[in-house]
Image 1 (cartoon, helix red, strand yellow):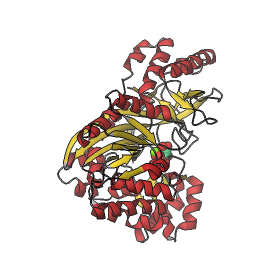
Image 2 (image 1 turned 180 degrees about the horizontal axis):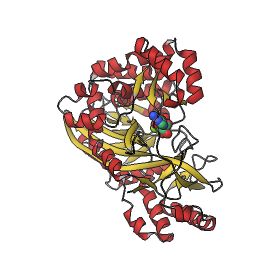
Image 3 (image 1 turned 90 degrees about the vertical axis):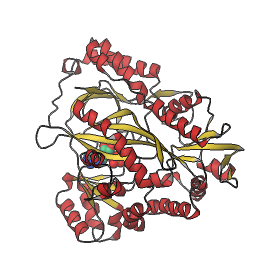
Image 4 (image 1 turned 90 degrees about the horizontal axis):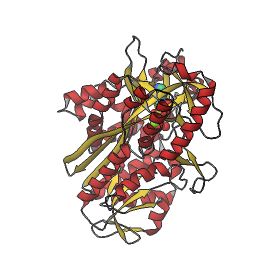
Length: 477
Ligand code: ADP
Ligand code: MG
């Protein structure tokens, strides 16, 4: 593989310039608030560091960038539609919940809430649809969706602050024309405005917004960006863990949610997306919140709509057409972003795909129903696992996906306590979507900004929180 983007070639190999500018870049990141707590001290802000980021912006072709924005409202509509379609979710996840305990547990809560009847009437979705740009067979780059995150989609806060860092770096490098081309980007504000809108429609002046956070809070600054923006509208925000909810939350007769005596209008989950986030008490806390009238972001149905199994089922012929029956153009825009996705359900089709992947593992990614990075299998590992489980129902807890191969480019990944070295990198573009529904009426449906993450090519998997990718800014050409 050769890197063909030569945009920054004049500075990339000038060691002295790079060293100077890297030091200045780090200081600028700290000044702009591109911050993260340290591994050593995840729950105190006494000593903090910068979130990892690229020294230079990465090139994204304008055609694919605009395409990613143009399809975001369609994805919002799709996720919201799936979250209201019981038959689709039941059918799509039927085999998965037999093999995967975590999805089964979520599904159990989903069914329990449905049985009781929804108390919630206002719905808030905050998602991030992630893409890579496939080099394609010909010369045209193609935007391909990696996944859509419907729960705890992060870095909308910190990414709102990285553009200023890259602008400054380019200015210092004498590239003010290029600096002025970097686009403003503020997903934190758009996300916060979604929360504010949901709070207003909930309609209780005293009620608070509750962020459900993890016990390890390294990425707190990303959340604070959103939190502080909500506070500017004079809406109170509290941060609590599932265990606090278990101990101190209750429902009244109208299933209004109360936390320590305060009514909660909106629950924004920044936790609860993986098995390690739950013990028995946390599951009970989750159920209590789901049963309540509070606006959940996301509600349990919307979380299920973001599973990888649902993503694979959506790629089946006719699935999108059925779900979005009056939206032919949206269907076409969505479908154009799909890479090949394959079921491993028991049966002839699954048998065949398992055999194809074992024979040619480099072509695929094997994905379990997990979020947060570091869970997928590639290459030799994919092959070995599939060989072991190919005749077992366990295989239905995974899906197969075509591997997307982006064009690499050279950059420096700036990470605290790490040596400065040039790396061959690939990027993943995310677009944030926000929507609000009241009853059957969608009252907000927007894209609210983007996130570019870049990693060295030697890492097959991984996000920023997983310690692999770093924050970046797109340079649109
Ligand atoms: P997670 O929920 O863990 O974030 P993803 O589907 O986003 O799961 O996969 C994690 C990472 O693996 C992505 O950020 C990307 O770097 C890589 N990846 C996932 N799917 C593909 C694919 N089809 N082709 C190439 N890389 C992929
Ligand atoms: Mg991901």
